Length: 92
Image (cartoon, rainbow, N blue to C red):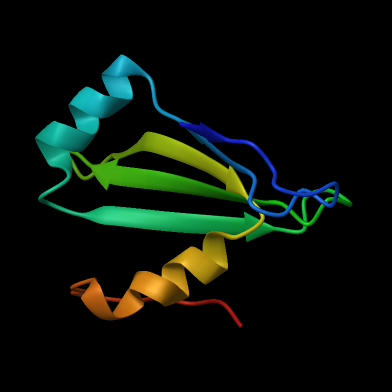
């Protein structure tokens, strides 16, 4: 998925990368656990890189997708109330 920026500052830019094997992992193991690791301030462009990880039957983490965006946190906050959590970890 690619959404181009709506301004010169890069506002609204979204790039999601998911390969066929990653889609298969997501479909197979996504019901078991989904982990999102968000890394921010990687560049001077204020982009965040979120890695979506699923856990296989041997408790091994598999990268199921990557999201590069300057709005990940805003998207998360918009939909946070609709997400069902078993556990939530956050680094402060």
